[in-house]
Image 1 (cartoon, rainbow, N blue to C red):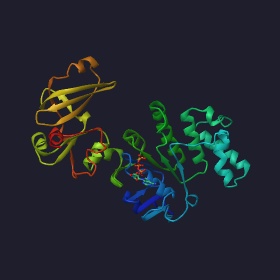
Image 2 (cartoon, helix red, strand yellow):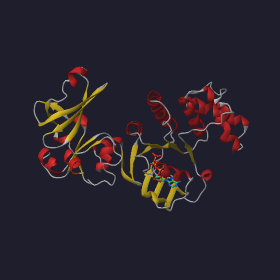
Image 3 (tube, rainbow, N blue to C red):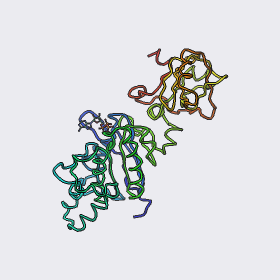
Image 4 (tube, helix red, strand yellow):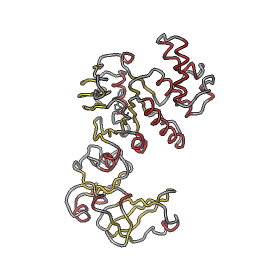
Length: 357
Ligand code: ATP
């Protein structure tokens, strides 16, 4: 086996539950040592793909290959992967150390080696000295780290993480994002990370797959996904997207097609397209302006709060002009994403489209 052999290869992967096609044909390679995220709305098939990799589900069609070895029909324990779930179910009657050692005990690893490896795993997640505590004596973030140590102690080549930070509050979540990334880099393990939080996926991952209705809409680096979304679904799901199409596109962009301009790439300036500020939303470091352009599109503009919040608020109802650089206009090749407008709460529709609907 060489380093070029992907850690995970999925080929023609499908999974149906009765009439529901949860996974509708996925081909994907994840490199050894990669931090790979699966991002998508609820019900788009992320967890099912993870369970197919782990072996908790059998595919309806297709194959799962781990480090060059096809494992499609093998049981979970026969695969060199470990899974960390959101509800990290630690054994409450055992100490932290016993929890971490448990997997090794089951596999009849000697007591001495168990102790050594468990201590090492606890050090990796920065919980030295916590071994004697019970899970109930830990904070949520510490419990999450014990769950991680319990998986790391087995030294899997691949770690599957299903929304592992979902239960944590925002501050702790951001802290754990940094720690997880560091642990992954230090341990050199391939991480497959399921999340519906786009910011989390963008900040942590080497590459991201955006899921849409059981398929991968796009796979690429965070930069690719954000700056060059291939479909309007991706543009809308990852970040806020100002979609311009139809006559609005011809008016504002000067061409036919579907285009997107990100809110932070738009300037409120002296020149440009006229519009009226419908809403001003103060959000601490930034202010969001919702602007109805005379051309018929509603767009969101984000400005850093260099000026004071009250000055921004005074713009509500004002007539403004918006401009952007041509290089920040993203042309979207495939406009008719299957779930456009469905689950994409932060997508801004063209007024024209909304009126027509
Ligand atoms: P979430 O972010 O909400 O966890 P997800 O993207 O992980 O969503 P999945 O859990 O993979 O989505 O579910 C994909 C689809 O398959 C959904 O429509 C779901 O209802 C369905 N599904 C998943 N597991 C089963 C099952 N065991 N039986 C029947 N349907 C299922």
